[in-house]
Length: 271
Image 1 (cartoon, rainbow, N blue to C red):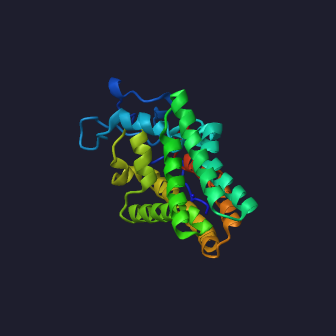
Image 2: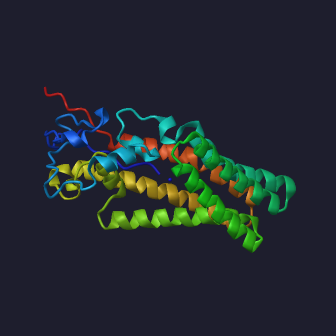
């Protein structure tokens, strides 16, 4: 997931209003906006209201990128803790290790798929949310099928390349049509409207959202720039290592930089 653009002045030109919060969509403490920052008054029933309301914010805050609206950034929560790291890394690491040892395809494919299934089974037994484990199982399953059909071990990683390309293209198009994806994400997480897109007084906030969105375009583009040549040359071990290094560590760094860009600024002290 290139250094962000200049963050601009300390927002003396931004409105000093506090967004209205309805009791049934109460925001977490880290969502309360100090006067004189990026706040604005959104009537939940008005034209700029977020129709998804608090439900979208509550769901989003449970995801890795939900940390971008936290008062204090938590690295552990952004990557899903130890379990999140294991679920993201284990199947690919097992595949690469088994392939390097055996230099054949069947054992690595079976082993990686077995690990992904086991991780889902553990969540089922413990009755914890399956979303992350299931998404990992889906990716591993697609990789296994593609590599099995082609007979090429590097095709185990092909799906990830397509996903990164789709994200990079989607983010780029959204930025070009003036719907900075990070701005949309943050405002949904906070249960607010989309006035940031057009309100002249929110131009500094809008610029930060655009800069953060370009940051993520850079993340996905960097992954493709490194991994596609390795895929085309059939360097399976190097590709697997690149996937690990440019996976969770790069995601966590980009998430932190995003948080630093879009977090609410304290009110400027007069005098």
